[in-house]
Image (cartoon, rainbow, N blue to C red; front, side, top):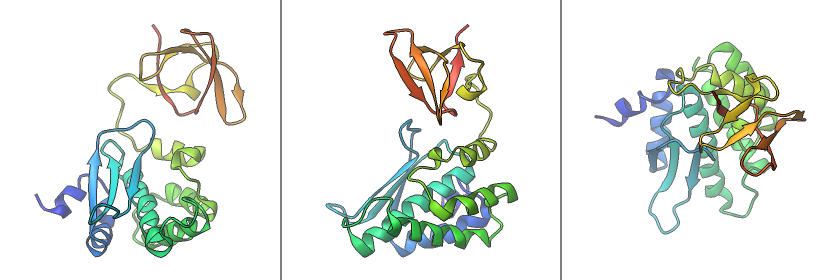
Length: 203
C-alpha cells in the first residue's frame, strides 16, 4: 500500500497531497499509534534519531487527525528555527500553527462550521485542541458511533454514578468554571473532569 493510500484512511481527501508533500519535504517519520488518553499526538526532534518523528492516535476522526498533524508539524518548524530555546506553545508555535492551518482553509477541507471554529481558534491557539471546548464539541460530531456505550460527562444529570475508562467509579457533581467536580466512590476524594470525558453510566 502506498503512502498516499495509507493517508487516505486517516485524513480528508482534499488534504492528502499537501500533507504528503510536507512529510516528504521534512523527511518525517509518521507513526500512527494506538489511542492514548493523555494526548492525541506528539512531536520528537531528530536527536539521537535521523528523522523528525510525529505520532498520531489511530482512532481520531479525519478532521481531528489532520488538525493534530498540523499541530505537531508546527512544533517541527519551530524546532528547526529555534531548537529548544522557546516555549513549546509560545508565540513562535502559534505563528507557525496559524500559517499552516490557513494553508488548508483554501482547500475546502473542513465543513463550514468547523472551519469557522478553527478560524476563531487560531487567533490564540491553545496547547491542546481538547482545551477548547466548543471546538472539541464540533470535532466530536464527526467521531464514529461509540460501540462501547460511552457518552460524555456533560450529558449526564448531576448525581449520576459513572465509570471512566480505567474502571473507577464517580458521582457527577457541580461544574466549577470549565470542569466538573466529581466524587470518587473508591476513596471519597474529589476530582475535576473535562466535560467531554468519555464515561459509561453505572447500571
